[in-house]
Length: 75
Image (cartoon, rainbow, N blue to C red):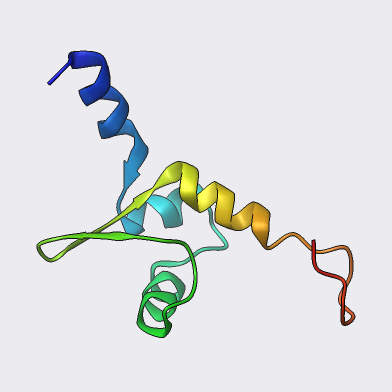
């Protein structure tokens, strides 16, 4: 595998613990709940390990942006 590609992939994937450290509002518990419910950011399973792609977490967060709290205030 190309070294640059391997380095990119190594830096793109994050464990739930790393995501919770980088985004304090996304706790490991909340991420686990969302995985169970089928909501939240996309994730991968590698054996028993759960991995998130950092860029997808950011994209998911951006997709939750709102203009207000009332109905129809999404995006």
